[in-house]
Amino acid sequence: MSYVVDFQDVSTTGLESSPVAEALAGLRANEARYFKNKYDHVFTVEPADEAAATIAWVHRILKEERDLVIESKPLEATEFEVDGIKMAYVFYESGLSINVMYTLDDAGKRAVGFKLSDGMEVPEELATRFKFARQKSRLAGTIRGSFFVIKGTY
Image (tube, rainbow, N blue to C red; front, side, top):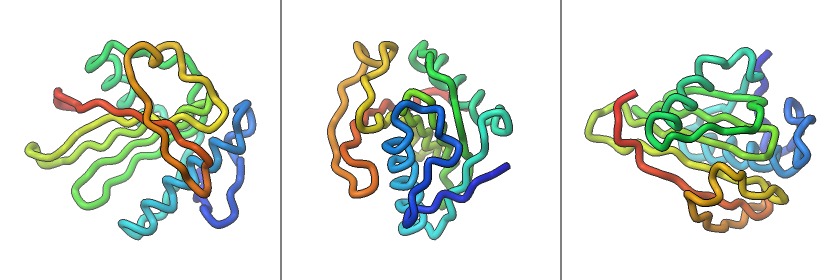
């Protein structure tokens, strides 16, 4: 069952099994606020078992681009299109959020972003490969993020 993320009344719905559920909920709400304010898009997520195709697409990009396999269990995901950009998000039990920004125009930007919830350690599979910058968020506390540019076609 899909869940509309409310960034005014932040809820851990769907994220309860995460040891950093509150911070992950804040991170998810932060993304919802961004898409509402910038694109007037309502950020809606689905449980991982209902979003298998989206999760598989994100995991394929990670594997083929950087030979990355995320060890944490996916809890939720979403996929949508805004302004000619296909967006996908996967929220993991560890507190990790991965997003894919994939411009549909071949000349556009394409990248994978990683965000770490406040209170979580950098996942072992990312620790030696990426540097994480810090960003403050009213909803999510301190977010640590990194990214890489997608070179292939998906």
